[in-house]
Length: 216
Picture 1 (cartoon, rainbow, N blue to C red):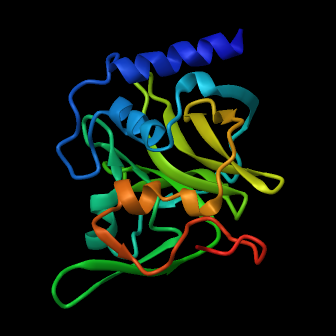
Picture 2: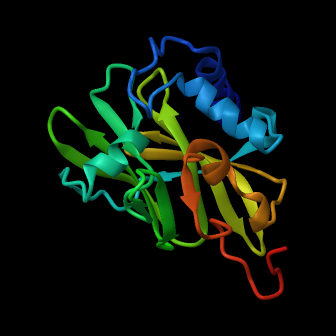
């Protein structure tokens, strides 16, 4: 039953539902397109995902929104249709610098990642998801019903499996969906090749690579 409900929810997202017009800011855009872009990049479909769990949202950290460098990170936020809310996927873990010619580059990142919801009118930041090396958060958006979806990867043994987190921000519950197709770390490049393709990444992969699996 839950699996059917979740597919209906995501079908509404992909069709546009009542999501309204896309935000005009750089990180906006139709949320269904953001998810479809991520699925297409890895050759996946929603039918490839099964519900793997439902849990309480961890790390309910909330406080003032005090960005380290709003000029660099605000254009990377994913904005709601009315631009009153924003999802921050990057500022916690990703180091970004600007060259003299204005181009952006990243020399590295932290292992831990955070997905935060920013209330731009109230100036508040709330952590929705937090994970270390077992997770990678690559894409996100606002579902028409107010939930937040996050797409990425979750570690399962020696494999990295595609995953989708559907966060109910009101109830602080998370539905966790996972696909069974495994990916090697060097295949996981959506962040650098699609979502943040305008940034020059000086490192090869977003997922850890063991000595037994060297980069090509």
